[in-house]
Length: 418
Image 1: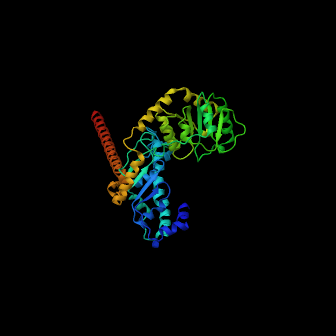
Image 2 (image 1 turned 60 degrees about the vertical axis):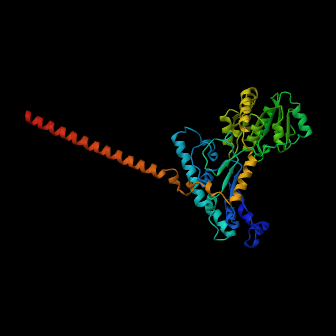
Image 3 (image 1 turned 90 degrees about the horizontal axis):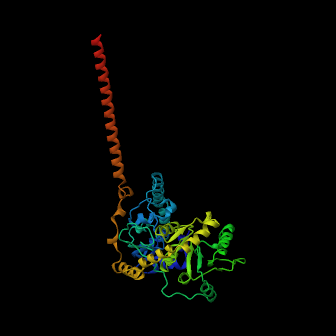
C-alpha cells in the first residue's frame, strides 16, 4: 500500500515518467520494506545502495549473499529463540522458521512487489529480486561492539553511532535545574517513539510511579501525557533532548526499550542500561548489552514492583555496570575513521565507478541448497543410511546362516550319537 501511494504521488510521477528526462547518478533505498521501488534503478539506469537503521533480516542476508545461520544470535527476527548451544529441537524449529520465511519472501512477497514495479514502470522492468541482488553496497547501522559478530560479504558494510551529536543542545531551564539538583543522581526512563509510555496498562503506570517514589534518586520520565498525581522526585515531559540528558553528570541509569540508536547513545555517554524490549530488534539489542555486562533485561508485560525496584537499585549500587560501560565506550571510540566520512567515501566511489559489481558475492547465484551444501549433506546422509542398512542386512544374513549351520551341525551330531 505504501509503495502504491509513493508511485501514485503526483509530484513523484513527474520524476519517473518516461518523458521526464530526469537523470540520477545513484539511488539509495531503505532495505526493510520497499522492494517494489527497486525498479527505479532500471528506470534511471543508476547503481543502488541499500541502507538500514537496524540489523538485516534473513531475507536481506540471503539477497546479498551472506551465509544464513538459522539460530545465530545476529538474526534479530528470531527474538528470544536464537542463541548458542541450543537444543536440537529448538534449532530445528529455527531452521524451519527462517527457510519458510525465505520461501514466502521469494515466492509471494517479492512477486507482489514486482507486479507493482512493472505496473508503474513498464512490463520490461527487470524483476525486483534481480535488481536487489545486484545492489552495489548495503550500509547497515550496526558495529561489532554493540551487535553479535557475524560474517559479511564485502559489499555489506557496518558502522554505527554516526547520528550522535557533536554539539549538544542545551537543556531547557526547568529540566536543567531538576537534574542539577539530583544530589543522589537520577534515572532516565524512555520507551522511545514507537512505544509510548502513556499507552502502558494502568497497572504498569501505577507500578512505575510506586517504584519511582521509593527511590532516593530523581526520575526523568518521557511520558506523552499529563500526570497530575506523581511523586515530587519525578519530572515528566512528552519530549526530551535525549543526548543532552545522557550527557548529564548526575545520570545513573537509562531505563529504555532497547532501540539501537538509543543503545549507541548510551554507550557514547557511558550510561548503564535496564532494558524493557517490546518489538523488532529490541530483544536482540538488549540481549547483546546484557551479554557484555552493561545491562539487565526485564520482561515489560510480566514486570512486578519488586523486580523493577530491585533491578534499578542493583544497577545503581553495583559500580561494575558503569565500569564495563566506560570500557565499552573506549572501545567504540577507538576508530580509525569517522563513520560518516566512511559512508560518504563509499557513496562517491559507487558514483565514480557506476556501481561496484566486483564486491558482489557469487554465492547469490547459487540455489539455497548449494549455498548451504544441503544437497551434499542429503547425499551423504542417504549414502551412509544405505551403507548402514546394507551392513546390518549382511550381518543379519551372516547371523542367520551361522545359526542355521550351527543347528544343522548340532542335529547331525545327535543323530551320530543315536
